[in-house]
Image (cartoon, rainbow, N blue to C red; front, side, top):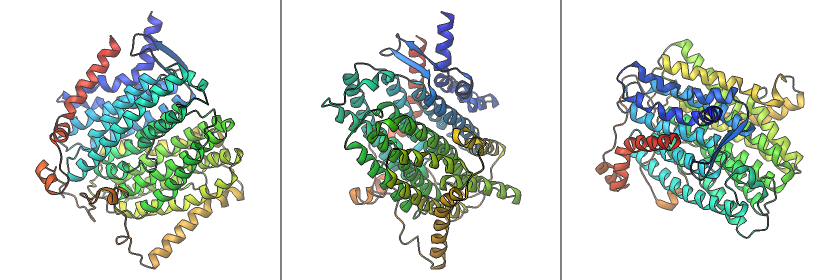
Length: 558
């Protein structure tokens, strides 16, 4: 009895800890800062808990939680991100009167994220995935500006569509396999008429979260609107929940004719299109959002190859997890770097510059970085599966990544709403910097292997040098990127017309005021009317999330 209770605490503790910590937000003392350690139990479980599962027949439809190799890797990098960003964000929002509300959503999303990783059955996965998705709405609309409320509307519409698709997909997969447990899903029939519907709904449900084209439109709207710590989590951890969903739900061990080629095509479109549009942005956070869309295109291509060649599925799954590990640290650190550019001292500016250049090089795949090894593993799987023709396009995509990184570094010099970092911001940023630098040691093929051949140097360097050369030519030719820039949300413009666009402040001085929250009347005047329900959700969502968190805790305890 005691052993079962202890196992339950180990596997549920990471998801419950952020919810249990919520009452600390009402304490008017320094004790409330303990909420910044909400991710610590998850981090400890990821590092030290043995692999295994536990069945809880009294929970939902018979829940199963546990830790396998995939879940452990996901939990290591997500717990690290939540811990570092939480410390950074607590200090970043020190002057914000809505900081407690922000952390209600933040902790609820954190609980959902950890629950998704530890869930080994579809019902539990769905509950925690919904908690993660809906709680993230509060992070997007935190500032209550016109842009934030519009981004929140686009996001919540897609979230609801995704939840409906996911529910339908689960029903179909359970019907095909006769089980809620992921371990039984490999036995799904490859000839059943409903299998294609299950795959389609799975791709849509998690494609929204991962930012797959053409379901990506919420990302470039949400990132600039949300506070920078929230942007770091949305890109570093939230979209990886979509990837985990694909890995859990898609039949990667069996062929899926038609779907494989579609995923490869859409992945290449995302990889190149995201980089192109990202290089034409005016806001550094919007550029980073498109960079995430581009980077997730690599993984989409990889999983498409796994559907085409079932024997390559184990290697493809490992490569996808390692790529996600690398991208999570690098992209989150880039976002936090945008919040650190208000530093005044010369030494501080140099440190922040290093802290942004390192992940930029990693994302571009520079030699001896985690990105080089992660991309090398990805391309090795693709080539071994017989898709040699994809190797060159995947290498060429690094040219676009280089352009986006250069554009981001340029724009970050005058990032809007930057303020001088304090001790807490430095601490969280430093933890994440260490994680980004150490990420290479978690890639099995890279541990201690820092001797690479000249061919490997050339293979990693030529796309970066070509990207730098193109940027230099554009600079010398005085290409006006302001005139040809594409607004965030891209395809929404021809579909639905104009909306309050993401504004970019060219410069920010200490003491400048942040944008004031938009009133419902102001938003209606701008052409984006909000219904009563949307206004009520924006104002009272914090209370709703507290009640939802309490309900989850009571359900689990009983």
